[in-house]
Length: 222
Ligand code: GRF
Image (tube, rainbow, N blue to C red; front, side, top):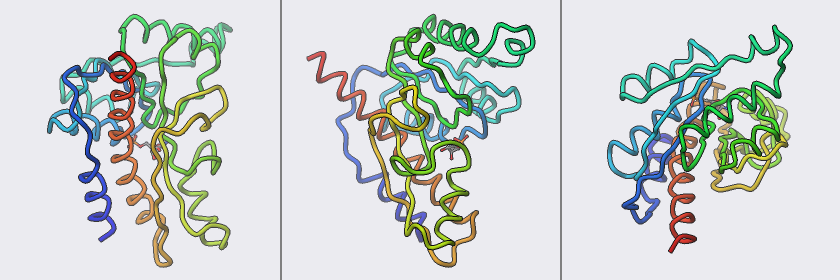
């Protein structure tokens, strides 16, 4: 039932479809279901975008398989050699930013990307970077936000949770919000049921956020 509700929510969002596909680099660390939501929206022509590259910091991320199935080039990056030989996180971030810059995207989308990016990354990459966080603004920053929200609900500390897409700033899971959605937690929810509802909402807002940014870019260029 809730699933249906979110599907409807996705469908009622009306945006003018742009003629100019926005070029995306999508960064993943895991299953890539949010990457898939973007791929599906592009393929059903509800989003005018091109995913020019998918980057993963985990070689086993299923998101890489999803990209390959749709003919999207992929790159795996790894922090470990940098920490092993003393170059460190900062140099990793600079090199990663330069890889992205060489691809010339319009927008970088962190879709379940589990590596904290430094200020140096953001200044080096020099374009807008957006992130998906499975909680509402100022709530449950960091990992396991869904689990922590579920636990907080059980303790009676919250009545609902949500998810948001925000501009990335050096502070983790903060930055101006582009789109947010409330996600109910029901009294008889299992963690899995709540997580599934959360992912359905994520898949809506990630597409909506890209559309919104695309519209903003077009308005400022008109
Ligand atoms: C999402 O819940 C996201 O909010 C969190 O990691 C999950 C990624 O899911 N940070 P997927 O890889 O897109 O399926």
